Image (cartoon, rainbow, N blue to C red; front, side, top):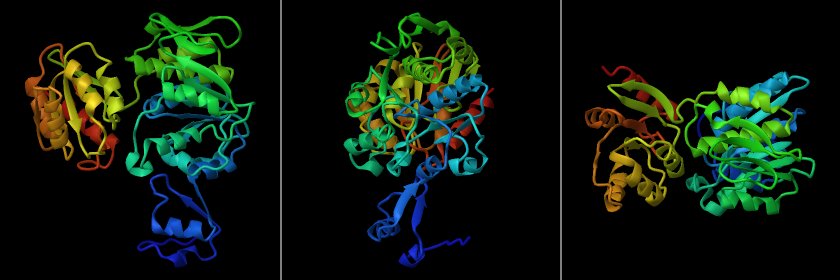
Amino acid sequence: MAYHWGKQTEELLQEVSLVVTSPGISLEIPIIQTALKKGIEVIGELELFSRNCSLPILAVTGTNGKTTTTTLLAKMMEKSGKPIILGGNIGRALSEEADYLPKEGWVVLEVSSYQLETTKSFRPHIAGILNLTPDHLERHKTFENYQKMKEKIFANQTSGDILLLNQGDSLVKEMAQRTCSEVCMFDALRPVERGIWGDESGLYHNLHGTIMEILSWKDTSLVGLHNRENIAMAAGMALSAGISEASIRETVMNFSAVEHRIEWIRSLDGVDYYNDSKATNPDSVIKALESFERPIVWLAGGYDKGSDLAEMMKIAKKKAFYSIFFGKAGGRFFKEAKEMGLTHGIQVDLLEDALVEAKKIARRDDIVLLSPACSSFDQFTSYEERGRFFKEWTGELK
């Protein structure tokens, strides 16, 4: 095996018949474009893994909620008693798992638009799409292209495969017209003709001809409508794979929020601190803001992805009594907040400055919510590092 560091030249492609890219690598870089012009096949790690995987695959995608849903689904699938491989855009790289696959079991994957972009034959037996809102446009250029990448999750499915779609998301719902799969709808608020749905009390399904209760919402500590959607889709995928209602209910009862996603950190002087560092786009922030009824001191900012902020600021005006914007995006966020009528707020340089201000402003029964709507790369290497910093800082408050 040979390794190369430094400039990528055309000579690297000599005697190469296959190029496997990391999800973060754009197909527009020169060496990839050269490979394509030479007729060299270019795929990603997800495609390579699926070509060498004989186990049935359950795959989750969407703009928001993927990690929570995938993690929850994996725990539900563990109730089958068979080995479970969890990976994709979460956990260990699939290339690390490929040599250790058991003879039977399930593969549960979180898949991103970056990973789906380089798939050709990838075919999950059960797939689910949570929602669709603009994201990663710096990579995909248009929302239409982004949607096409997401729809590749079911591009190779047949009538023997199952696709779960969110009835409450009009763009996702209409994907049923473009698939050969057996479609199963889910909705956290309204009944569906066939699938999984919720009301104010709990979650139900009619997959076998009769209405069955899956669980009561009292069985979960996860907050917000978006988490009810996450639970509904995970439950639908697990039921489609043969997991019982009792096993699903037990899993949900024992499941806590995924780290960095509306994660409760601590309470101090009657103020609750929540780490939502994984919220890197406005739609994800909207879901976080709408999860609480108490007054919010909102911390947002970081590396600006150029997202449209209008709808987020409209919701923030209703839910956040004070806003603190930080990082490279802080200036634009602060300007647009003022234009939308968020009169109580401030702009600071760094996240630690925002935390100092939040400590001064927050009152008993308030919530301090880090929900950035930005990536972290101006100050941190990842949203995980940013979230850990928030947790450590708030954990040391006296």
